[in-house]
Length: 447
Image 1 (cartoon, rainbow, N blue to C red):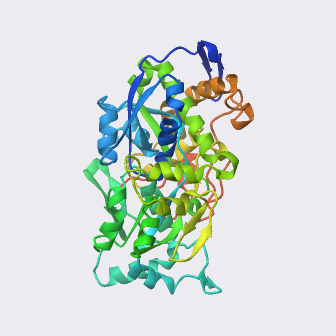
Image 2 (image 1 turned 90 degrees about the horizontal axis):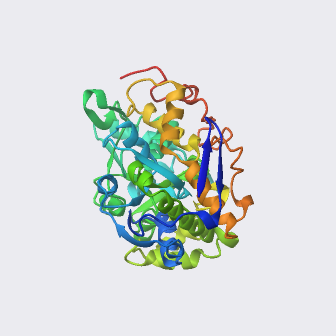
Image 3 (image 1 turned 45 degrees about the horizontal axis):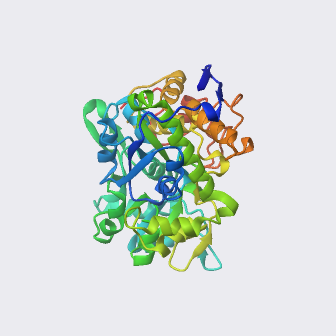
């Protein structure tokens, strides 16, 4: 049996591995998008971790993030690889209204911003160089003269991101705004969900695998996407990744594993066992300084998973990242699956996404700090995660030192300062955080 005691700030979980009940539902179908950060699902399947929990899982690629979310809501999928913003957006009713929860964060980092060769040529003259190589991180300050030139000629500067509540949307907006480029507001109260009000750069949705081809066709001039679709642009010779999300916000949370709240309530043992299998997959992915990554790349290269060439996936998954063709640099934490408590669902991670929804108008009305915390606690379920982790510890498959101290963990990280604009984020003070930005809605402002 699993017993969970919760207060407003801490929770304690007692679980005896021998007493964790059998899954209520054994045959499961999980959805994913063809990105390298779906790896914990593929690994849990291929290494037999799901089966060891009595689960018989089918993994199914989905056409886009909206279809994926809709199929979790209507029960066609039992759960899915999701954008971290999707369970939050659904819960607050931005787009589709539904109660979605997450008890597992799938990874840290993993995205980048790529521009076309022509835009890079124009940017490059504004980027500092040392020994003939660009100095990283490259800030959007170097893109601003290019965007200003487009504006002076009456030409729209178009960029792609994968979904309105995606990490990619908020990272691209964060990077642009830090360089003085306004990425535009949403105004759901007036029916304007384009996100292009007052915009210097016009952002629109493009599915991840279509990003390189859309840019090559000239429909967009750049994009923010997960791997392998930035490295694909390098391999095809059509674009240059200019900055990774690791450089925008070091060790940022990326995807989550989402299920409907009703599914979780009907299948508590199943849910804990799913999380157990995925924790084991994440541990395997990061074990021994990423020693298993070449094998992971072989798995991901299969057509039923990501289906990109081994070399393209390996370029980022094995601890390097290629910017300009031939400019390959070490980025050991470009993809993190378990280190730094990557799998733990921190409330402060949820609140950061909510602050960005507010900053750009997706949350149209001011909200008190307490509201941000309440939504985070509705959606992010560290109690379920802790039950899974405790079960693995009891079975000898994980060590207590691999996880936060569950009896004292508050779910709030210490203030984080590794942002490209050096603004410090404290998840316990969302409105004070919003006040720090030169571009974006303030805590009490409305469109």
